Length: 364
Image 1 (spheres, rainbow, N blue to C red):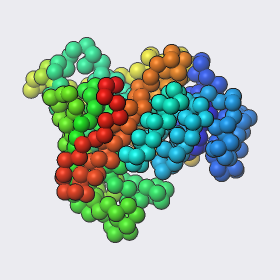
Image 2 (cartoon, one colour):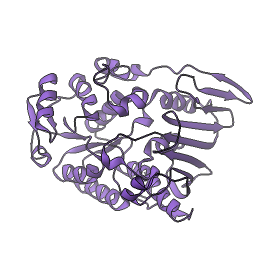
Image 3 (tube, rainbow, N blue to C red):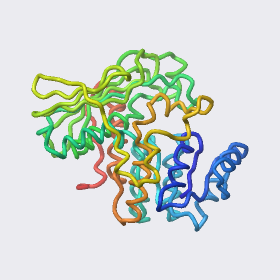
Image 4 (cartoon, helix red, strand yellow):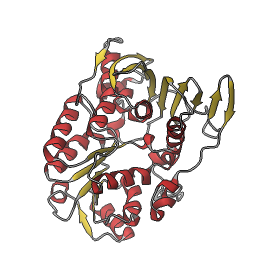
């Protein structure tokens, strides 16, 4: 394994070091001082400050990319062309065209591509998925997701980002539970962010809220997204309404979610799902690199540790390679989940016009 980007990416180093089927072989970051600091701390000998040099290393089988979002497509494509399996943090890309290029590169290379979407490996998601698989939910009738976050103080390329350009945390658990893709979307923008933020991407909206229709399904889903100048505790939430039971995310992080049976609701304690993992990485559902007070990553702390998802993501990527199967999500699902948000923003800029998503593959 090689890891590219050592901010949030450093969270995965001990997971790959301790996984029974991987060697944490190389790390890559442009900042040489920090590269050496991380390398020394985790005792990783192979270090690269140049991505192009790293992907030419024949000892590397798979690359986990955690670089800034505008580099995701370029680096994923280059790594696939170099014959590496690719895991990439969200979003897959910043345009529909880039998503299409990644799909083409993956198909040509035959290597695995997996977008490392935390929201489909959280405790809450695994709990609701378990309810679904046991038949306790019954027929799903409607889905709702939200991702609200204040990103003031994040690196400059985030400033003014259209809310739906980074919608995968809210979109993905809904589509994964429905086991469907988005077919088309209508989205409205609301409110206004400051002019100095608007100028970066030409997007004026404080909030974007979308209705999605799912392909080959009777289901629709709603997603709301905000990034700047909207008061709200950080939340990555999903609600599932079904005919037997429904699940609603809690309003405050300190509370527990609610499961409804008919009109009766009760708060439920969500269990950990570390038992699904190899013994050697089970502890990483509750601890990680960013635990000490002087070493906290904003994404990790705001997102409540991403629901214990990191070792589940790494394990799925690793096992998909070893078992010679598609990862979940595979390249086609990753593209649909990413383009759902990109097309939603396009709709918002056109005052709610229905936008159809490209079909990356007829059947997944």
